[in-house]
Each structure stands twice: as structure tokens, then as C-alpha cells.
Picture 1 (cartoon, rainbow, N blue to C red):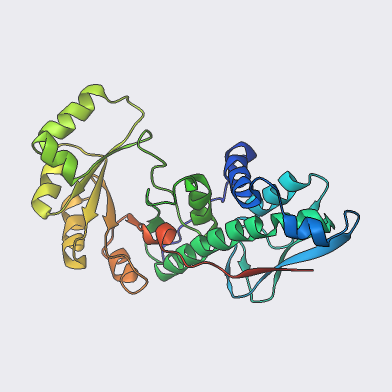
Picture 2 (picture 1 turned 30 degrees about the horizontal axis):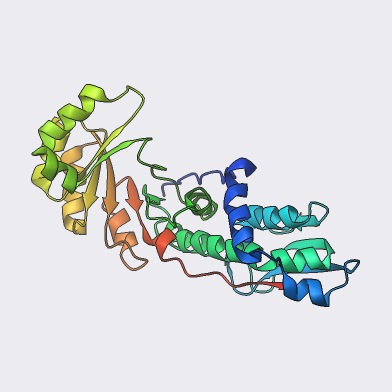
Length: 287
């Protein structure tokens, strides 16, 4: 059995987290703040609240929840009980927060929105990771992320045991079908990239056919993305490649198909669904 080391979760720095959380709080509080809470709850009221999972899954986003509570009131005490990247059972305590009832109620929805969404991403990712256990394949995300939340969603993928593809347009070259159509083919596209690319960046090329794969291999492309190929063609691609390029499979990746894709011998399997279609993970905040 092949053992694939899982990635470290590597939480993003608070400088990258806070702008998204601050924006969400500003959106929720509007021009007048939490008028419901401020009219009902006395300023001196203090409470202890518990964030709890309401289903089984993998947790991510407590870093954003803590940021939300602390932005509303830096004096709040936030204690993590089930860290990001951990599996949680239905009813399990994820974190406790103590302090001003007003502050906790005001930050509650934003904290839960982030943690529920990101735990959904982590849980969806974990399902694919578990499905390919024992193979060489790694599950990776894509750029199909919620605008403004890419750093956090890619972090959630890591919490689920997946790995990150490129973060944006600027950290790696990925030549897709429309690039090839506009450039006039694979060879001119590769030549133009190599003429201006720095030595630290990698080149990945998307191919639809085995003929394109063979041309890409002859040009020494670093990574080849096998787009929507059937498992039989992927297996043939692995045999043709003979380790000369890293192979990534993409398209029609589901919990039902991912094992067969992994068993073809590809190195990576990319899925946009783990970020753009992950169901929300139900988390409650109980006083």
C-alpha cells in the first residue's frame, strides 16, 4: 500500500484572514449595528457559548470564527476544543467563547457562516481523499473558489487532507484549450511561454487527446492536465508518459468516479466541486 503524507494545514496569517472577516461583519452590521441585541441585552451581561458540530465531518474555519469574535470585542475569550483539520462527531464541542453577550450575539452569524462553509469544504475534500487512500494520487483544488475567499477555501482543502493547485494566475503557467486556439497550437504556445517565463515557474498544459499528450511530452512540459479523459485513456497516458511529466486528471471527478481515476496511476486529481459545490456543514452556537 502506498502511503501519501497529508499536507500540513498551514493556517494563513491573520493579515490574510481579517479583511474577509471584517468585510463580512461590516456587511452584516450595516450602518447601525446589531439593533436587536443592543435593545434587548444589557451591556454588562456576560455569557459562555459553545460552538458545536451538528453532524459528523472535518472542521475548518475556526480561525475565521475567532477573528470575527475578536474584531467585535477583543476582550472575548475564545478557546478551541476541536482544532481545524480534526474530525468531529455530531454534538462535539468545537470551541467555547466567553464574555460580553452583546458581542457574541453580534459576531455569531458571521463566525458560523465562515466555519460552516469552510468545514463543508474540508468534509467534502476528506471524502475524496479517503476514497483514493492506498493509491499514489493526491486530491487538489482549483481556482473555482468563491470570490474573496480563495485563501480560506484553499486552507479548508488542506484541512480536509487535500493539496492546493495554483493560487492564482501569477504563480504558475496553465495553458488551456482557449490559449491554444488563440496561439495557433501547442508548440507556438510553449515557445512563447518559455521565451518570457522565469526559471522558478512551472508549465502545465491541458490536453484532450493522447496525440496532444505525445506532443506535450516531446516538448518537455512539466505537468500535463488530462481533461475529461476516460479512465482507459488516462491509464494509457500514464504508460506513454513513463514519468516524463507529472499527470493531473480533471473533469467528472465525483465520489463515485475518483477511485477509478486514481487507480490509473495519475499523480493528481483536481476537483472544482470541493470548493464551489461543498454543502454547508451545520454548526450551532449554544449559550
